[in-house]
Image 1 (cartoon, one colour):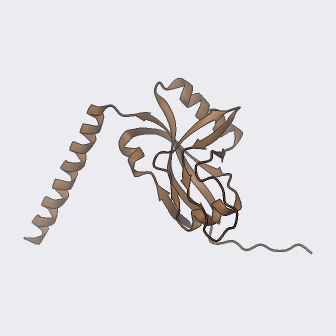
Image 2 (cartoon, helix red, strand yellow):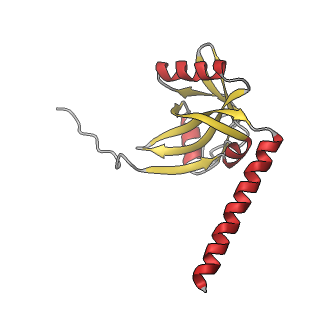
Image 3 (cartoon, helix red, strand yellow):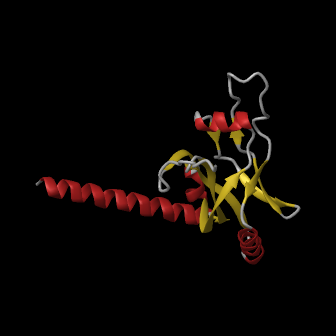
Length: 162
């Protein structure tokens, strides 16, 4: 007799970490959802929120996409722990890997950066984006636009009070 497996609701996502700096430093061309190959203590540590992807990036190695420089802290109750800065394999379908490789080849100055880490139906997922680094003047434009939007919202809020 087969066991029935019940899962949490399919649409639920639980945010674990975000790379807020990525959207400021890079222009995201395309994004993908990838699984993350982790060991047991890493899963427990990520679920506890001991993860940092701010300085992380992804690179191809032997036809596979690997996440480098992500920091998953040690899980305190475990007797034997993992290396916090080890490289981790990103799990994508073959067609998605080809799309990412093609985007990196076709776009000059392109790189792959993690945008956020989240739980989806009990699995830890990473949203990675093919990104192009912004120049200094692009960042200035972003800051100007953000400040102008903030001023407009503030003016609207004050106008609605009067």
